[in-house]
Length: 336
Image (tube, rainbow, N blue to C red; front, side, top):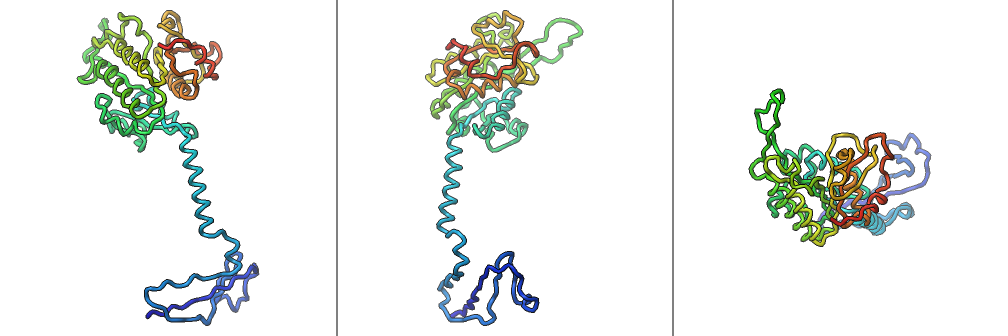
C-alpha cells in the first residue's frame, strides 16, 4: 500500500501580497494566491489506483473545460485544413532552370493562393533553389520517377527544355559561327517530346485540372535557325508536344515565348500573337519574370484555358505595363 499526501489548494482573487511573515510559506502568484495547507490530509490507497482530481471550486470555472478546449482546438485545426484545401497545389517542372526558378519562387511568395512544388533533375539543382521538401528530384524520361511529385497536384507548369551546348574550341576572334551539340540522353526528341509527353500522361492520370506548357516562338518555320542547333530540330519536337497536350483533353495553356531576357519584369506592356506573327515585328523578346507571371496568372482565369499564343513585350517605357491579365487572355482566340 502506498501513502498519498493530498495538499488542498486555496484560491482567492486577492491581488494584495500576503504578509511578509507568511512569505516563506506562501507563494504569491500574479493574480491568485496559492496557499499550501500546513496540515495535509493523508489516506492509504492501493498502488495501482489513480489519485483523485483536485477540485478548486470557483477558480476552475473561469477556464474552459478540457473538452471545450479540445473542441476549440479541433475547430481551429479544421479551419486551417479547410483553408489549405482551398489552395491550388502547383508543380513546376524544370524548377532548376532560369525561368523555372522564378516561377517556383513566385508561387512560394503567393502562399495564400498556391502550394508550390518543384521538380528538378539532380540533388544539386534541388539545393540550388533551397532544398525544401516540396522540391522533388526526377527524370522526365522515366515516368516512375515523376509519380511522387505529381500525386495530388491541381496544376502543372512545364518548363523543361533541351539545352544545346557549345562545342569547345570556338574562337570568336577568328570569325565563323560556333557549333553546338546535345549531351547523350538530352536531345530535343528525348526531352521536349518524350519527356513532355511523359509529364502530360502522368499528370492526367493523377487528375490534374490544368497544364501550362511554355514553348518557343518559331515553330511554324521548319528552317528556323534554332532547329539547326546540334541538328536537334528542337522546335519541331516542342511543337509535337504542344499538339499532344492540346489533344489530351486536359485544360491547357500553351505559351510560346519570344527571346528570353534576364531583365526585371512587371514594367512592360505584354503582347500576344499567333502563328509567329510577332517574329515579323521588332517586339520579339520578353523578360523571364514576365513569362513566369503569365504562367501563374493563367491558372487564375478561365479565359486562359484551351488557349495557345505567342508572347512578347514592348520595350520598357513604350506603352503601359500589363496588369489586367484577364483582359490579356480574353484577346486570345487561338486554340493552337
